Image (cartoon, rainbow, N blue to C red; front, side, top):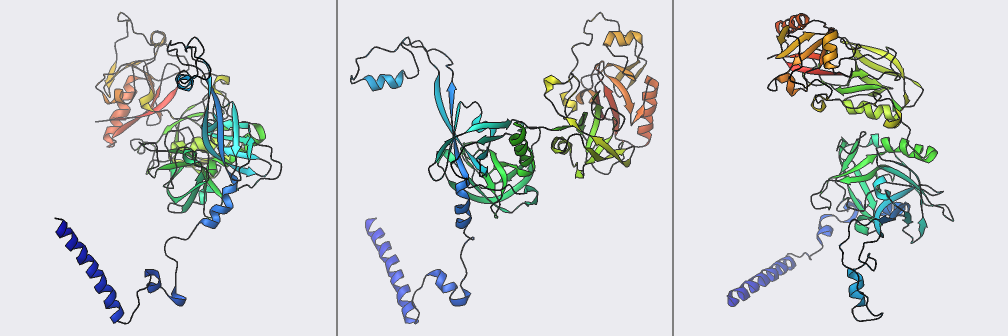
Length: 520
């Protein structure tokens, strides 16, 4: 075997020698590959254009965020620390093992450190990072590329967008970066991330915008930029730059089974972050608009009844009493297509647009009502904490059939007498609403329509979230008040070859939602 390997080696060497000799005999000296391909005026650079100059100009504005937290003990292992003579040979070993315990073995509070990233947006010392980077911190320190370390105080934080603003007090103006316009970024554009991955400060990675408008269910205003630029633990809060050196995103999250980058990272775009950052600097909190409606998605099953070609916009399933549009401007069943010049492509777009729009200023809304687009003026109120609102006053949010559960206040006593249903249609048992049925099912006087007294669990209506005690208010945008009216309208829809019945359903709290029930 050794002889064969030696022979093979010799053959390779001989082949190489023949190659060199052949080149010399041909009258051409061997040159580096690049020199052979491009010489003189035709020389071009191999590989992507360097980003060294750009990275060098930006690194000074990116900081490492170090925090200290006090961690409370979670239990007591019950092993008392032994009393050892000071300076003994086993002192260090036992101190390591019993670290964080008192002399009786009980765990004591200890401090732990965590690392993240941030960037300077103002030479006076304002720094942007992620809320989750500094959450729970007792001390915050910003470490700069030149070795400077400054204590930072928290100016304000917003958990819904995971953004925090810090302030340091520098002796001289700091190097800073500008916020760019993320709306100009296209899929395929080059981006650069600078941060503190795994505690390795000043790391630079380059990639492209892989996708836009990503919803990863991190919060109510998800609209992330997805990038394949390497983002790892410790990059959180760091900037994502375009190739002009403007910040177009704040690196926030990654998808990774191992904890390391697999090329799927997410950044909060500046189109969302810029307004939040300005408000945190000015008020110490984010102040958002509030329209005072409950909304749900427009589905394929609904478009025929809504007289639409394709699903778009946000469907208004309820109006909050006392809210900004509780004046007839917007009605239940309307579809909001545009607000303040911004298109509402899907339901979550309206949530974000309302939150970012000015409060107290009249705004033009385009809505679809009875198949016709109309323009109305709305004025947003200010969104406040849930605890400060009436129980029914909720910000713009999703209301889906799957989230609807039977109300616990419905009668469950098997001996409760329910009037004999007069109609059974759509696999629903229906009855008129009168004083007796209202009392039995706790239906308020404000709710009008046809009572549902039974819903088989095998029915399509049950799968859509309809339950006993709900009330059918409208079918295909027409009010119904008797079981016969429901049957008649369903028959009409079938004659018109409709595949679904578009029902407005009220629960026993008066909350409305729109449900498409198959007619098959």
